[in-house]
Each structure stands twice: as C-alpha cells, then as structure tokens.
Image (cartoon, rainbow, N blue to C red; front, side, top):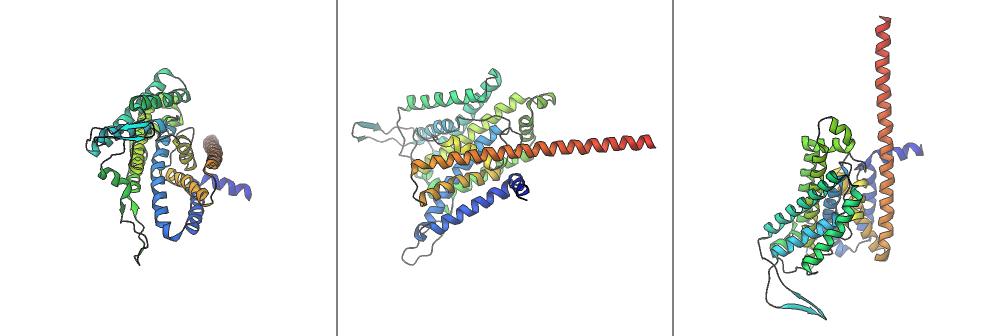
Length: 371
C-alpha cells in the first residue's frame, strides 16, 4: 500500500506537488497579519511570476537534454542593457561615503529597452547553444564558463553602476494590479488584485505551452531531448534545435531580468545571482525530466510557487535568512529524487509496452500457423 502510494505520488506530478503548494499557502494565509495579507499575497505572486519564467528558461534546455547554468548571468546582462537604454539621465551624482555614481542612460522608450533585452538574451543563448553543438564540449563546462564571462563583462562595462531613474510606465509593470489592490483603512474593504507581472507570466506560459504542444518545432525539440541520435536518424537536425532551445532559454532569462528590474525599480549587476538553484528546482519539481523529452509548463509554475512559498514560510517562522539555503538545497535534492523516480517509471512502462507488443505479435504468428 505504501509503495503504491509513493508510485502514484511520483507519477502524478501536478496532483502531488499541488497538494504541497496548497498546504504551504494555507499556512502562509493563517499565519500572516490580516492587515498585511493583501500585500503578502501580491508580493508572493510577483516572485512566483518571475521564478516561473526562470524555471521555464531552464525547462527549455532540459527539453532537449541540455541545461543552462548561466540563467542568472543572462538575466543580469539583459536587465542591465534594458536599464541603460531606458534610464533617464540628469545632472548631478549620488555620493555615499567614497562611492560615487553618475546617472547615465539613453532615455529611450521603455518598450525599446525591453525588446533590446529580449534580443540580447536570445543571441547570448543561441551563441551558448551553438558553442555546445560545434565544440561537442559538455554543456556543464560551456555554461559554467559563460557565467564568468557574462558577469565579468557586466561588471567591466557598467563598472557596477546601477540605473534607478527609470520611466514610471516601466515601473508600473510591477506596481499595477487588476483590480487595484487596497488595504483596510478607514473602513475601506480589502481588494486583492492580480499583478500585471503575473498576467504577463500567464501569457508567456500559454505561448510556451503552444510551442511544445501545438507546433512541429516544439515536437522536434522534445524528440531531440528523448534521443539525439535517433532524432538525427529521423531527419531532425538536432544541433539546430539544441541551439534554438538555448536561444529560447536566453530570451526567457532576459524577460525575467526585465521584470526583476521593474520590481526592484533599478537595474543592477546582482540580478540573477540566486537563480540557478531555483531554476532547476522549479522545473524538475513541476515534472520536467532532467534527461529531456518531457516538459510541464503549468507544473513549473507550481514548482516555482513551492519554492517562493517555502521562503515566505521560513520568514514567517522567523528562521534566519542565512539558513534558507539549507531548505532550498533540500528541496533541490527532493526534486532530483522525484526526477529519478519518474525516469524509472517511464522505463518500466516502456518495457511493459514492448512486452505487450511482442506478446501480441507472437500470438498472431501462432494463430497464423494454426490456421
């Protein structure tokens, strides 16, 4: 009975992790201060929105049997590019002790900065994928090296300047909710609004879902993840789709970087520093296979939700922020164990299907001989 329950827990990805998310959310709601509950839930949904996109960025490379350790570095570069392009310069400088920073920027329309960041993200990701395909070097080495290269370029070019005089319409992506959120004040009823940032993430999820479930392009990427050699024999150019998957991953990293800039109200080089562990945990907890061939878009959001809610729960329990990484690491280990369980179940199902097919064929042969 216990073994069967564990098998069902591993097999039913969304059902199992949804229960965990609901339990954690219930704890947050019951333990939160009622007057600040609206703020807590809105802030939490923004974090979930950003890390869902980060998780999908990792998912895009996992789909083709690869991975991307440089998700944070790509998001940081794209965020700084966007910040520089749309930052509004003004006379004067900010001096804090010996640290001086001049306000610089091109003051371009906010959407120009966003589009430029997405393009940069796609190009960087595609270059990374192309290097993996052409050199045949393990993705671990390429993506790890690219982290250092991108961080170094980011720091060297910007000299650690951050851009904080951003257009109000760009900051509104973070601030606005539908409907507008209010808190109890002078008899006014509380309104729980859905952040625009969260709506943007839902739209992106629909687009990504359609890519993998309704287009030949997505199916070929999944086929590449199942077996690269078999995909090549089937006429699928696996190298092209691996490169494209990394490009999509880079673009999603860039989008997460842009949303983070809007949330912080400033572009800074530290954006993305803690994304790597979260990206793997969100995707794998959600049901994406580490070895490729299977993705789960909605599951990635639930996985990201679990990670963010766990952080909130730890904060409510007044556990030191320095200890949070212990729990995040434990969740990542659980995610990898679930991945192993899913892979074992898939292999077992494949063996059972082959056995049934062989039995049917052997039965048909015996019937023909008898006839």
